[in-house]
Length: 205
Image (cartoon, rainbow, N blue to C red):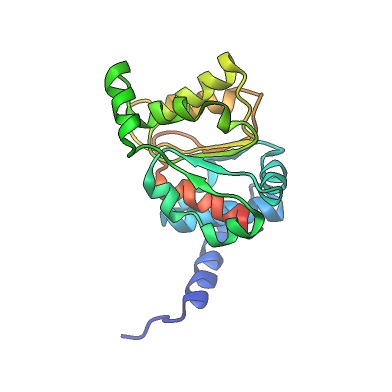
């Protein structure tokens, strides 16, 4: 059986297949690259109409990364997938506390999820950062609460939690607020690979 074996050729062919699904969305070149990487990561062209990027999200994220901004994630899968070698060139790091013993104790004491407890624990460290949430709607809800009630001000929120309980609602709430630039997807779709794809796409810009 004959098949494509070269990684770059595989990626190029994938983007060729994705391109027709983006042509009527009036995307900028940078938006096209982010959409393409998200769709490529998902293996699902149905993402095309449900990806939402606020007008200034890409430029804000690029400027922040070039200035050495850190990235805070809800789960280890997102932290692991982000290209830390590229990020380090700009001076930034990736942080995730969901597996810390301290966070486990906070979650048990306050009867909340660990990812929610982790975001609460990060607190003011989230200022001037990029937040990437790929799994837990509770983490996104908590970040939005911190923004609204405690004036926490991240540069960009990449919020794409997946699932049937809370995911769609948390992403709708993200899209409806106008304080923080964002990247999200509508509905129940999403997940850690989608968050990683969005972050890495911006890093590669």
